[in-house]
Amino acid sequence: MSTTTVATANNTTEANIDFLPLHGTDYVEFYVGNAKQAAHFYKTAFGFQSLAYAGPETGVMDKVSYVIRQNQLTFVLTTPLRSGNEIAAHVAKHGDGVKFLALKVDDATDAWNQTTMRGGKSYLEPVILKDDKGEVVMSGIHTYGETVHLFIERKNYDGIFMPGFREWKSTYNPVSGGLLYVDHCVGNVDWNQMNPWVKFYEDVMGFKNILTFDDKDISTEYSALMSKVMSSGNGFVKFPINEPAKGKKKSQVEEYLDFYDGEGVQHVAIATKNIVETVKDLQSRGIEFLKIPASYYADVLDRVGKIDEDLQPLSELGILIDRDEEGYLLQIFSKPLQDRPTLFFEIIQRKGARSFGKGNFKALFEALEREQDARGNL
View 1 (cartoon, rainbow, N blue to C red):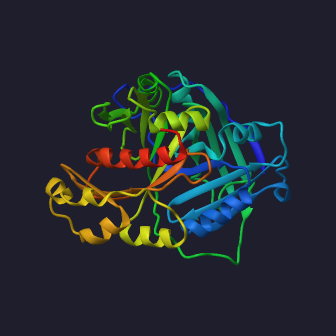
View 2 (cartoon, rainbow, N blue to C red):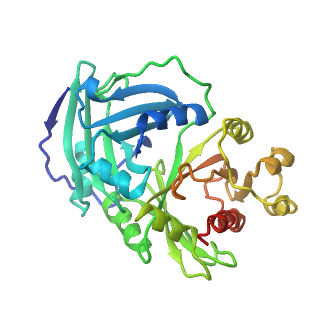
């Protein structure tokens, strides 16, 4: 593999043109304490398959990365081999968490130019990674906390993942869990930082604020938060941003910020085409989901109207339902996937709806509060 720095130049575009066309999420990379064990967990619990590997055997001497895939969903799990480096410091401070949200682009050099000229702080100047399968161009910018957006251009690459990785074959290949792709990723930011980061996504990345929820929309008897949903120009990438709001007790965002020790990705929402079968399968593999009281289902159809699914299995599994003008959605939230009460997953099935379950906020956050209270953090 070779690495080449790409010469860059400032290119201006008209303000009404999508200057950063994104084609979805390329991959999500987690910094973790033990990548080998984490890869086995995600394969076993969620039905990912082995894809690629990088480490000392491939010439990478300071870290190991395992790449796993399920349909269009790709995770990279990276761990340091020694202390005294960025990855080790990240894991020591945050525990297991998301470091990179890698985005698909046609031109990673132009993506870097467009974002840095608008005020984005560079994380990685455009580089070309080459091997006998072609080349991948990468660049990146910083965002909230220690989270980074990478821009990935792979139109001239035919390899298994990218240069520097080799194919990872395994005799252990569990059946898929029915997960399809990243629907959206939610970030938690500190007090009074939501609007500055909204402005960042608007100015630096050309996103639009498509939904806003204040502390009246997202509140319970004890806690509250505020959220704004940012969407790329073409709508393929969505990043809701949460911040705490004042309440009687500590909100879920405050708990996250305390235990993650800073801002970061709160949850990754993953699409499925059959949420009932997916959740049943994941539960059978040991994944735990938040419990929703039976009272939620007593009048839910009065609120959302007719749905295609039988209500009984939704109630038994704790799947939430909401409707907007485009249709309805079904969603459920896992408990945290590590000992710190930080990162969790959402499983979502959209039946036309483009929203994010506003009608479910009260039931969801009460469920989260019950978990907080059990941990002594409410």
